[in-house]
Amino acid sequence: MNVGGFYLRIKPRNLRSNISVCSTQCEKEELIIKKVQSTSINTARIIAGFAADKKAENIIILDMRKVANFCDYFVICSGDSDRQLKAIAQGIDEGLKDLGINLHLKHGMKSTTWILLDTGDVVVHIFETQAREFYGLEYLWQDAKQVAWKKSNLKR
Image (cartoon, rainbow, N blue to C red; front, side, top):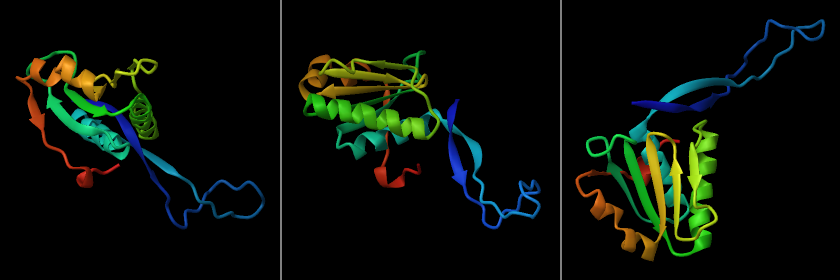
């Protein structure tokens, strides 16, 4: 399933414009923006990478397509302090904005134990370590398969 999308910025070399502002032909550098469709698994992997950039711990991606109808993937991660939870959430939010993907929901940014971000197809749970153990989403959704991801393979 395709969601939103992100933008690649390509800067062509020696691009000449047929439109002339002055009386002479002017050489201009322009940005061409192409919309590239992102699949929900790619979005989940990109989100996991943004979380890893902010030192999130125990990052997992769960494939929810066969066990839930409200999203395709969960990204679950944890942090040690309220500052780190907020930094992880802000890092994900800013990274997605840069890619042209908007969050539909941000919940818990003022609370300090559980932050929820929703892109529509991917739901992100950012827990304080103790709260993650208490709520046990991995156990609750144990029928969902875990998706492998590697930070080094991510293309953003």
